[in-house]
Image 1 (tube, helix red, strand yellow):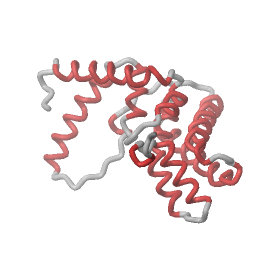
Image 2 (cartoon, one colour):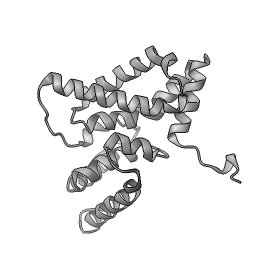
Image 3 (cartoon, one colour):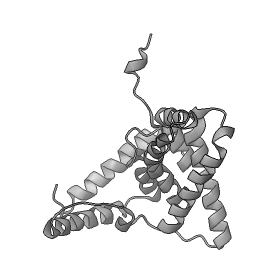
Length: 195
């Protein structure tokens, strides 16, 4: 018999708990839900070839749709999947509306960071980040998309990641391992890279 406390909480179950609390009247839990799922949703929108601004708009529209439809979601456990599907559909609508599909790479500028580093520390960090992103750019599109999504989730829910990326659930872990091994090798082969 499995002890419920020994089973690690997934991103999906955490989202369901926060959504239940929000529907029960704890409006602050919506902020926690937004913080938990926005990175996954943003990268899901970016995977549909939207630029950073359009991805932000799609994610924001999806959160508004969730608030409007909160009572219509019968099973809180489905809230993460509901949001992923909503983001994908809205992204497709936006791409179709703009009548262009422009492949875009994930750029270092897409990360929002705030630090109190000294300017020289920030320059050193930016140089390292630039090298890292150059090497990430050498990975296949499949690797880049997968790493974008799983990199920002504490405990990614593979079923939702699989749905977001259109991959079989069983291939996510092995593919992630191969992608990270390839990235490690690229970094190890770069004499300018410092660990």
